[in-house]
Structure formats: structure tokens, C-alpha cells
Amino acid sequence: MLLVAAVQFVNILDFVMVMPMGPDFAAALGIPSSRLGLIGGSYTAAAAVAGLVGSLFLDRFDRRPALGVAMLGLVLGTALGGLATGLGTLMMARMVAGAFGGPATSLSLSIVADVVPPERRGRAMGIVMGSFSIAQVIGVPAGLELARRFGWTAPFFVVAGIGLLIALVAVFLLPSLRGHLAERHEEVPASRLFTQRNVLLSWVMTFVVMAAGFVLIPNISAYVQYNLGYPRSRLGLLYFIAGLVSLVGLQLAGRFTDRFGSFRVGTLGTALLTFAIFAGFVLSPPILPVVGIFVTFMLAMSFRNVAYTTLTSKVPRIGERARFMSIQSAVQHGASAAGAFFSARLLTEVPSGALVGMEHVAFTAIALTLTLPAFLFAVESAVRRRAAPPLVSAPELQ
Image (cartoon, rainbow, N blue to C red):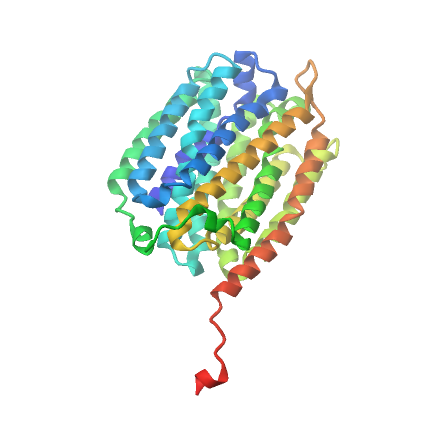
């Protein structure tokens, strides 16, 4: 779990560091702040395509070498980001990173689902997803400070170096993971997944969750700086505090999900997230300080994300898990791209750099978020019905 979490740390850090640094490289490369969503969207769009392609073959290989190839491609794409000269070249670099980062995520989650039984999977997902919080606590503030001291390209090269080191360690230290191959007595056609109602519901739920988040997330850094007047020099501290809260929240959410189920925990996260978005991005001025907005938002995301990720890991059978996760990764990243691109169309920028139209973005995020409890209830009910032992008739008892 720690090795998988380390891999996810690099994967997530590569993704999340770009959004807080958006105003920095936007100024250096002449990119309008209102177009920053295109940078995040290019990564997620490429990851979506890669997830669909990966679904055709990832279940045929040992997880360890497959993960190694995905990580090396991610490292290459990250390094290319530091060589970008404008919007087009930066988007191309992010597409390379996304094309390998998406499969790395689906393989990591498949490994967790392969080796951890369902009754303890919430806690395991909390540990692995804790890499997101560690990236927030350590990586994002460090990346922001590197960009401030040495220029916006420095974090790309440093993360690429760290990624190469962790990829090599993971490949050499992870055991061979071929259990899913032993379970595949016959080739499972991809079309079979598309005939399962619960699989389709799970993917729709994933789309809703990710679109709700990424219609808003790529624009938060620019919004708090240019609209709310939060100083750039304290942005690293802001992500540090929010990351600490998220790290604690993920561990609590994992334990609560194992105990109370995904529906209850996810509904709690939905209510808290709706409040955070409304209070911080709809009301003007917001009723919470910037730190309060960040902390509430990250805590809510922790509960929501662990609940839905744990639940979706229980949907596929072991022989089709990587294929399911690959398509889910495609849906996840496609939804993120759609949300980021859509927000770029809703927002405009005034000469001061402030974003106009943020309330429309926030209401879109809220509307999507509020549909999550219904999906959680439907998918969790179906998973429980499948896991329940069949009823034995009276003659069979005799």
C-alpha cells in the first residue's frame, strides 16, 4: 500500500501542482487566466482517451511492469512541461503526461482492489488517497516556492526527477501481481461490462463527481488571488493547511465508509461540499475567509471521494477489474476535461485579472454535486444484493 501510495503521490502531484501555479506560468507565457481550464483539461482529455485504450489490454499483463511503463511516460510528459513556450506546447506536454498518468491511476486502484478484501477496502483507499493530501501538504507548497524562487519551470523538472526515482523503486520492490490473470479462465469481452446496469451506473456517478469538481478546481487559485485579494506569497501556506485537513479527513472517511457504508459518508460529504461552494464562490463577499473556504472544501472532498471510490472498487469482478478501472479512469478524466473546458467558456477576465462569472461555475458544481447521493444509494444497494448469499428453499434445507 505504501508503494502504491508513493506512485500515486507523484501522479497526483504532477496534476495538482499545475493548477495553483496557473497564474505564474500564465503571466510568463502570456496565457489569459480565464483560459487556465484548458491546461487542466488537456491532461484529463488525454487521460480519458488513454483509459479507453488501456481497457482493451491492461488486464492481460502483470500489474507491476504495466505500472512501470505508465510511470515512465508520466515522468517524460512532466519534464516536457518545463520546456513549454506557450499555451499550445504546454497543452501538448500535459496531454503526454495525461496519456500515461490516467492508466497509472487505474492500475494503482486495481492493485488495491486485488490485494485488499472488500471489508477493509475503505481504510486501504484512505491510505492510498492520502497521497493526494500529502501532495497538498508538502508538494504543492514546495512547488509554489520553487516557482517563486527559480521560475515556473523548476517544479516540472523536480517532480519529473522524483517521479523517476519512485517509479524505479516501485518496479523493483513491488511483487509480481498476476492474481487477476489466474482468475481469467476465459477472455472477458469489453462489451460484457457495458451490459451490466451497476457498471454503467458507477461510470455515470464517476462522471458526475469529477465534472462537479473540475468545473471549479482549476480556477480556485486565480479566483482567491485576483477576486478575493489573497496574497501570492501565502498561497503555499494555504495549500499546506488544507492538505493537512484533507489527510486527516481521508483517514476518517475510510474508517467511516467501512463502518457505515458509502451512501451515508458520501451524503455527508455532499452536504458539506455544497455549503463550501455556496459560501465561498456564490456569495459575494463570501461568508467564510479564504482559509475557511479551502479547509471546508478539502474536508468535504475527502469524504465524498473516499466514499465513491471505495464503492466503485466493489463493482467489477476480479478478472475484469483493470478493464473496468481503465474505462472508469477514462470517464473520470473525460468528465474532468469537460468540467474544465466548460468553466473556461463561462468565465471572462477583466484587466485586473479578476474572473467574472464565477457564480455560474459554482451553481453548476452544486447542481452536479447534489445528484451524488442518489447514485451512491443505487450502486451500493446493487453491490449488497450481489454479495448477499442466495436464499435456500425448504426442500434444499431438508
